[in-house]
Image (cartoon, rainbow, N blue to C red):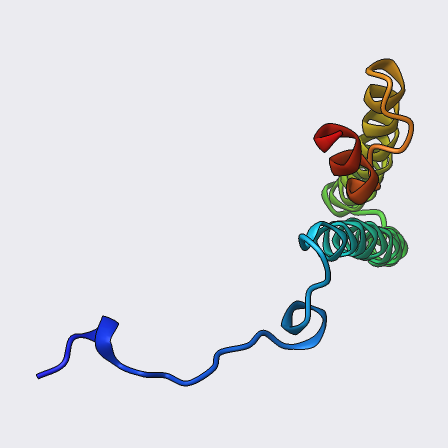
Length: 117
């Protein structure tokens, strides 16, 4: 009986950019992180828009009910707070980069290049 480590699975490769990394893989990792941050920011903006519209519809449909009106107002307020936190996080990262002398902290390829020099 063969152990799992003795089995031959053939040549295993990644897919897409990960299947053919160039150099040390730092550029691929940098692209991945930058794309992930950008995608999460876009998702946060779309989510805020959805929350804003659903809160506005809740306010219009409250019909004088103070509890429903308060619930809709809280929904809008929470959505706005979440959007401000996401945007503030990007600016805070940029501020830390400026304070510590890293001009483009979100460009991880450049950051790793500075560290390894």
